[in-house]
Length: 339
Image 1 (cartoon, helix red, strand yellow):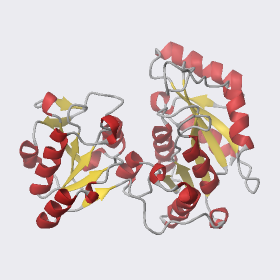
Image 2 (cartoon, one colour):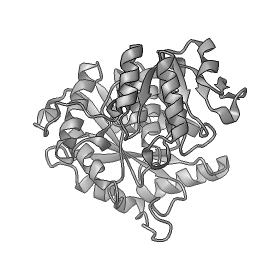
Image 3 (cartoon, helix red, strand yellow):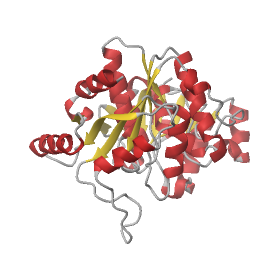
């Protein structure tokens, strides 16, 4: 795959450009250029930024990947023009938003005429059902990243731990449960778009497939947060469907409230309480424990980051580190020791 990453107006935005950043960090070999007319002619992490689809053609892309979250999850008119241009130039389009391009009659007909695919990553497979218990028979060690909040780095932590395990020669595999992880790994199910009754079944299907793909150590990308007032449902369904042997808790240093509504704060409880809660809701058939804490210290100096890691270890009694900033070796050591 040779990707043109579509990031119009958002390539410099760390929040709305999260999918683009995930692909650049964990699947850079698939990217040939980034589209953002506001930064045309610049480079981003070594990749050329172009102003139009025509300008990108010299880099010979075969796929255009939507690399941003748009306001409200829908495509504004300028984006529709970009998507039309991609299709007309013969590029497959990979889309991770909740709006499905394949459901748009105009774009679907245009894609048919030009012989390209519209790949809606969040469209659930048609054969999902409830969990069957086959998840408990998967002959692999399963580790699930869980969080104190949404958008806290669960996918990033999963990728970092998987990469470190593979560097050690382990048969390790990332199990993608969201659109960015799917774009990186090339497979998976976006579980937040699955009918709630089938969510655990989707997670079961994912760990089964992960083992079939050769994984003996499966890192399941977490979603939501158990106390999040909007997205706790996806957390519980994923937890009970993937039936992990161990959790890695993800938290951002200094974050005291969940990112829900500034006018009505939802406090994050002490991490020790959160750990106890995650352990209490594991299925009795597989009572998982939290084996380590991944701390996001991106807003801190290095000195303050190391102090925050030490403080979190003292609070939780668990090995703690920032795997992006300081490497994933310590956390992988902790996971392997607990497994």
